[in-house]
Image: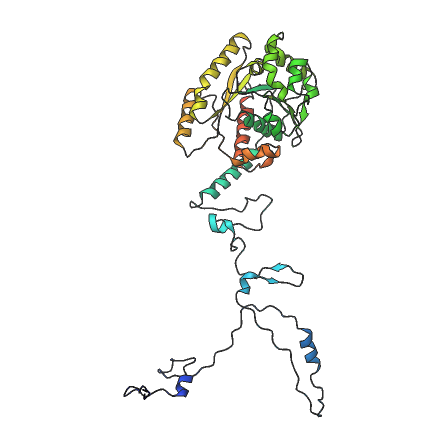
Length: 435
C-alpha cells in the first residue's frame, strides 16, 4: 500500500528547522519578528554563604602549576555552589551551630502558622513585659480575644485594689441543701482569693466527702486528725488544722470519711448543736486570735453538721446554680436560717448569694438570675461565676483555681466575689469620720 504523505496547505509553506528553533524564547516586541533573546540567569534575593568544599580548596591551590608537558595550567576556581530555591527564604537556614535563623520577611507577630494571627487577628509584639496579654489588640471580629483582654484588664484592676481587713473575725457558713451547686468550689476559691490578698483565712471542711480538703492540698485519709475529732473528742482546732501548701496565710481543718456517721453519733451528745461553737470560741481566744475569716463548708443537707455551722456563724453565704432545681430549694433553706435565728443564734443572717455556673448564652440562666435578684436584691452579688473548665480542673492538681490558673475567667470572677465580700463586711465611716 502506498504511504500517504500529508502536504502543506497551499499558501502556507512548511516552517524550516531554523524557524522552529527560534521559537524557544520568542520575543514579539519588535514588530512581530521572531528572534532569540538572551535571558539573564536567575539570582535569588537571598543567597546563603556557601562553605567551600575541600576539593574546591585543593583545586585553587593548583592554579598556575606546570603540567607534565611543560605547559602552564590555567588558574582554576571552585565551581559555584548551586543557588538555593526561593522557598528557602521562608523556611530559614541552618547555621554552623545548628541554630535556626529566621530568613523570612514576615514581621514579628505575623508568623505563618501562628494561631493568634490565623484565628483571632491579634498583633502580638515580641517586646512585651512579663504579662502575656500586654501586646494584644483586637477588633469586633474577635470575640474570644476581646473576652480574654477584658478578663485580663479586670484582673489587673483587682490586683491593684486593696481588700479591706475586718476588725474582728468573720465566720461565714457556706451552705445549700441542694448538691452540686458549687458550695465547696466557692468556699475554697473565695478563701484562697482573700488569702492571696494578705488575709488570714481558715477553712473548716464539714462535708464527709472531703472535697475542700482535696482542693486545698491537705491530707484527709482515714486516721488523719480532722473535724470529727473536734466534734466528738473535744480535740482543739489548732491541733488538727493544716497549712495550705500554696498559700502561707490559708489553713484547713480537714474532713475524713469518719464524719459520715457524725450526725448519728452527735444525737446523744450534750449541747450537740454547740459543739463547733465551743471549739471555735476556744480557737479565737488562743492561737486563732489573728484570723480574719473562717469559712465553714457544709454538706448538702440540713442535718446536725450544718446546724453546728449555723449556730457559730453570723453570716450565711448561699451559692445558687442558675437552674430551676437550685432555685426551688432556696425557700426551704431560708426557712431553716430563720428557725436557727429564732431559737439558737439571733445574729445569723443571709449576707451573700452567689450565682454559680452562669451561662449568659442560655435564657434559663438569665431568668433564674433575674428571679433571684428580684427577691434578694441586697444579698445577691452583681458578679456571677461563669462555667469554666479551669475551675473544674484545679482540684485534680490539689489546687484552687486561684493558684492553678489566676488568669482564667473563673479565677478572676472569684477574685471579684472575694473583693465584694471583703467590702461588705467593712463598716462604713460615720458622718463624724469615725468608724
